[in-house]
Amino acid sequence: MAITVGASSALHVFTSTSLKVDFLGCPETLSTRSVVATPVNNGMRTVCAPVKVWAVHAAEPVSSGKPVQPSLSASQGLEDWSPSSWKAKNALQLPQYPDPEQLKAVLEALESFPPLVFAGEARHLEEKLAECALGKAFLLQGGDCAESFKEFNGNNIRDTFRVLLQMSVVLMFGGQMPVVKVGRMAGQFAKPRSEDFEVQNGIKLPSYRGDNVNGDVFDEISRIPDPNRMIKAYSQAAATLNLLRAFATGGYAAMQRVTQWNLDFTTKSEQGGRYLELANRVDEALGFMAASGLTVDHPIMTTTDFWTSHECLLLPYEQALTREDSTSGLWYDCSAHMLWVGERTRQLDGAHVEFLRGVANPLGVKVSDKMDPAELVKLCELLNPQNKPGRLTVIVRMGAEKLRRKLPHLIRAVRGAGLIVTWVSDPMHGNTIKVACGLKTRPFHDILAEVKAFLDVHDQEGSYPGGVHLEMTGQNVTECIGGSKTVNIEDLNDRYHTHCDPRLNASQSLELAFIVADRLRKNRTSIHDFAGTSGILHHAKSALPI
Image 1 (tube, helix red, strand yellow):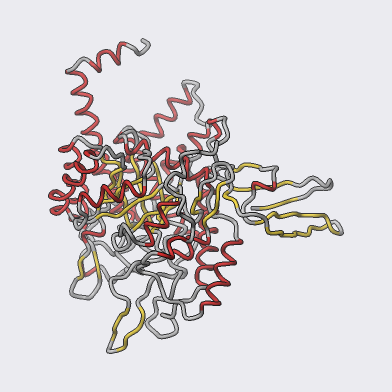
Image 2: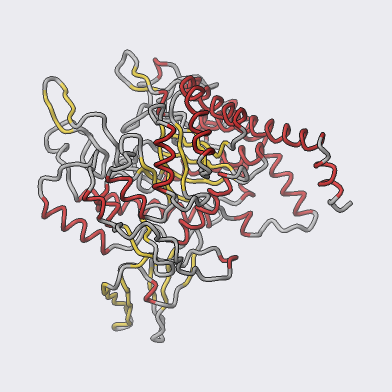
């Protein structure tokens, strides 16, 4: 956010919105601080005065034409909820900070900071996820297993964003439907751990819980939870969002650049070649449009929507960035557009579910083969009592064999209860193995097998596969074995950079996108064939102008 004042005394307020820029003339709509700039000796002086904390709401889709009206029913069932009500519940996976006063000071500072995202952006994402739930769009959610302070730089952000753009083009071309792009970025720092402590060479220290909690170096000082790391995480998330917004709206994501998105190290790979062939076809289509007089300079062709997400784990941080939306009266966690609750923290009576049930962001819940169908129904009803499409995404992580056995029962239970969710496949977490050298990896063929199983089950059940959720990077890493550009176990040590779990590299990510796109294309073709035999396609064609 920036404020400038010219020669006159007029005050101009600039604020970034959902990958677009709006100009707000009303200081009361700003979140956290009112920033006033006044001329001093032909220079500038900035004065910050705290005001009531609201969620900035300038990011409503322009096409709606109507301001958001407060919902009388939206807060039903939340009379006993507040941003801090989670503290009365059992909270798992939270660090024990040694200095409560230091923690309090950090959280008070975070509460005074501007929101990272806006309420209107989250509402817009919810609308798009509703289309995924109904089979009208496909979610592509991907990014780092855990973001780190050491690897933070613009090139890494750009490369991951670029691979997600490539994958979205592949999926959109194959599935012939919109692709909703959500990054595991700008906040995916904290990680749940199976054990509170780690032992190496007889030395016992607290487990590494992510860069926003403690350090990954195995020494006593690094492993002490430090609340100041939350301030650094906030700053890094803000810088990441700033760059993502610039990429998404500044021309980098323009469809006319589709042939320029290939990463150098993927150009000579099989997947890079397939992508370039597809990109050239898209480029030819754009040329035809321009020659026909159809504009290719429309914002829909030159910009893209991109949202951020992370696991809701470090509850003190999430609470500190929760704001009340001035237009609807709803509470939003303004640390990300979308949040999910993990397998280890999704207890019905737990602190994390308690916190999430009261925020209006679109939510996800990670589900393994341990999930009981009746429990999933209760969890859906708790997190989405109004049964609003797009509000809740069920992210399935089981492994292919278990998924084929377990997922049908979950789908039937949710459908039988009349609930609407977006079903998404996380083929990463159920396929992690440890090899002889001591490193964790994920075989690409197992990842692919789970995605195929996910699609098969939805075909079998007549439900919609809403998307995929991947741990991936734009870097040329060697962390997952397999793929057409084969990474062997012997290659793992070459470029194994992850701070937590192994990620797909760019080539593997593209390969997976092509395979999913081929399957979506076949599904679309089979639907069209069925429509043709029933006469539906004939009537649809007859409605088209000749």
